[in-house]
Image (cartoon, rainbow over all chains, first blue to last red; front, side, top):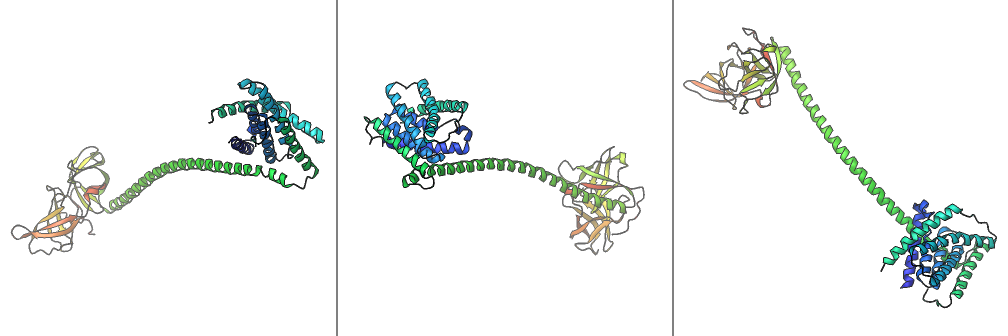
Length: 154
Length: 279
């Protein structure tokens, strides 16, 4: 059941992200629903589930955005692992710590890509500090909303 | 998938997943043109979402446009209905004006044909009981209208003026039982007194039983009453009945439709009526 819910959540996130990118590209710049999904699983499930969700979400994101296959999978797996580990060590069920984790995961995403690109000898265009902060802020707010909604689901 | 993996080995799982992703990345970078079945499968993961997003977007957009279009249609419909109402009113007014123009033209033609000064007038009111025995005109003494001036229309005689105020006057029509007009049968020149018979029309009295009168004969004024000029149409014979003694009563249907009368011509007739050429 949990796997099915995870797949459903992943599908919904993919659909929502595709819709946003296509029809509201401005809003899509400020949020990464896949990262939110991975952080949610990291904070509410065991690390293995968060990593599995990270890989799944990353690969779906790769197929959606047309980036190098495995790039987002790698990043999201790492995020899932880190958030899952942190979530298992600390109590992160309050809004502010969750916001912090969401913000940090969003900032970590391009940093990890930058590291991978350097390691593979590929060029990488860093999105810039302000857009990154905006994206972190957007993901933080939207993520908290997602946590609030998810806590009320049966 | 989470159930299949043990929670006690996160590092191992991390290693496997990162290796998988790295493998995918390296294979993709190494051979940019060829794709493995796994890569094809993963890349195919996104297409249903993209298709669904496109479909949803089109559906929402279509619905929205249909809604907006429908609202536009409703607004347009309301605007057009108002326009239709306004145009219908204009058309009605134009039709009224056209009919009035036609009547006034006939009146003008009649006016040109009569050998007297005349004043066109509008019928302002009828009798209180709704009958057409008495009519009120919007012309009076100021325009030269006097008592006993005859009132006619292109169709025939209406009556005579019985009251003339400054700006209005009253007409006793030939339908009034107290009205009398000297008339004659146009075909046989048989004369008689024509009196009103209320809404039924008029009747010619004192017609000899031997007189040659037929239904459909035209009755015109004879001019002998010194009020109506000679030769104006009064009506047609509708029926012939027996009268007192050796006379018969001729029922006449007036040519003028008194219930729909709107414009008339008042003849400012001087004393002593000249004869009008017979129609």
